[in-house]
Every structure is written in C-alpha cells, then in structure tokens.
Image (tube, rainbow, N blue to C red; front, side, top):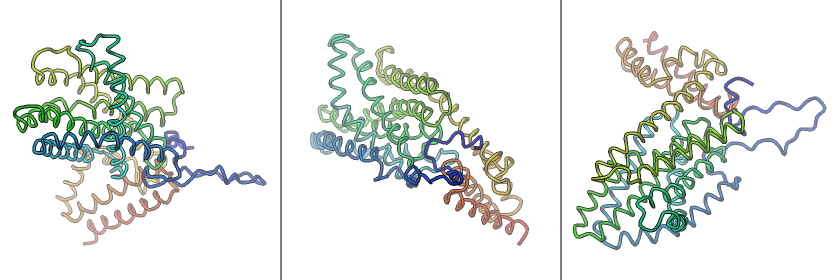
Length: 400
C-alpha cells in the first residue's frame, strides 16, 4: 500500500486484492460502488438524514411562515437579504477551493442539514437546555445564551459532518473537507437563524424596514463573518480528522472532542457579555480572536491537504501524468496564475487555455486517485483528459 493510500478512509474505493489460490471469493464482503454524491439509497445514514430533514422541516416552516406574515414587507426583505447572503457567502468559499470543486449536491446537503435539521432540532433541544442552564445560573444571568446555545447547536451541526463522513459518496477524505462541509452547515444554520431573528425583531419594532437593515448588517456582515460558519468549520476539522487519520484511536477521539469543544467555546465567547458597550463594537472586538483561531486551523488543514496531494504526485500517479515538478505549480493558486501568464506571453492565448485545461485535468486526477484509487474508472477518465490536454498544449506551443 502506498503512503498516499494510508490517508484513505475505509471503503474509499481502493483496488481489492485478488483471493489467494484455492480460496473462495468473499463476494458478500466486497465494498459497494461509491455513489457520485451523498445521495445513496442503500445507506441507512442517508435515510436517517432524510427522516430528520422532513421532521425538522415540519418544525421549522411554521416559524418561517409566521415570521413572514408578521410583517410581510419587512419579512420579505429579510428573506431576500439573507438568501443573497447565503448564496454569495457559499459562492466565495466555493471559489476558494484549492484542489477540488466539490459536488453541488453534497454542498446542498450540507447547507440543508444546517438550515433544516440543526435549526429544527435546536428549537426543541435549545429550549430544554436553556431551562436547565437557568437552574444553574439563574433566570437573569447574562451568560444564559453564551452557555446554553453552544451546548446544543454545535453538536447538532457537527453531527451533519459525521453523517456525511459515514456516506462514501460525500468524499470526505481530508481535514480540509471537514472544514469546508462544516462551514456550509454553519452557513445554512446562520442564514435561517438570522432570518428568523431579523424578521421577528423587525415585526415588533416601529421602524420595520430600518430594523431589517441594521439587524442584517450586525448579524450578517459584522458578527456573521465569524459566526456559525466559522464555529462549525472548526468542529468539522475534528470530525474529518477522526475519520481520515491513521493516528491512534485515542488521539483521534482527543482531536474530535477538542475541536468540538473549541467550537463551543468560540460560540460562547461571541454570545458572552465579556465585552460591554455597543453590540457593533463588541462583535468586532470578539471577532479578532475567533478569526485568528479559525485562520490558524484552516492553514493547518490546507497544509495537510497539500502534503497529501504532493505525496500522490510523487508516489502514486505516474510522472508523465502529474510529476512532482508539475505539482509545484499545481500546489498554489499563485503558481498556477504565474504559469498561465508566462504561457500566454510566450505562446499566446490558446496555449494558456490549453495549460489551464491540463491543470484542471491533473487536479481531477489527483483527487480521483486519492479518493477512489488510481485504477478506478474515475481516475482513468481523468488520466485520459490529462493526456489529451497535454497533447493539445504541445500542439499549441510547437505545432502552429
């Protein structure tokens, strides 16, 4: 088994060794083919997700409708603003992916978990937890929200990453994947929760439309940039590490619990009364340590992901498809852009386009080889695209 193969989660599609001579093939133990997305009707986890989503939808939709009807004009404005916020936020994060464009179906599933399941279940569990915390801290404690909300919401959101990790079609294969899907789950939660708070607060105020604007700016553009998406990205890293790492079980559990606890602490810190004064100033001040911690964790996960694919290029994938020298360019956006600019200046626009096509094909090959194995059909198709793109590039450079 190659060094890169050691990072594959169980059931990732690596080639199965042939049975020993005279042995009876254990057909019943052969892993099932991996589905293209997390939608896998053969998986009990998928049906649990569906059941929870339906139940949570029935719990959440009356609240959404009530919020819209309380003041239709301000409710509609809140719905439009928060929907656009979610689409733009998700598009920016999607565009920042370094090695792989993840399935839009998987992204939609992650967002739906946060927007439906986590929100719907937390409406029930959150009230119970708040009552319990009131018994500890007192009904008038300013720490009620800081303590009770993270204890319910962060585990619920992290369970979405667990559910995706248990379905091979979701293709959670690195810590960076856990951060990405965790961020999408947190974003779904943040959009629905933000809409509910905004619409309800506006309906009770004298200046409904103005309240929508101020609430959206505070909860979305100020505090929202380091809110639920950031918290769940941190927890998602711990979940992914648990599933993809080859470290000892104790270490994997320690990282998982530690990262989940970190997400709860960050959430509690944002909700806490530690910084007094204007909520705008408090949100900005609290955002500094939260953002710092998130950036450090993301850089570690991205560096780990880069090391995984660098090892794939060095050990697993043949050099005529992706060599270590090729990966030096593929390993950063800056190096890719510089290579494209140089190719355009030396050989023209068409050569730069062909180089871009080859880079994309090489990245697809690395991802397919790591996820499904080098001998998989997905990797074979990507290898064919690399060969065709390299031939087209050679023709653009020397054949014209």
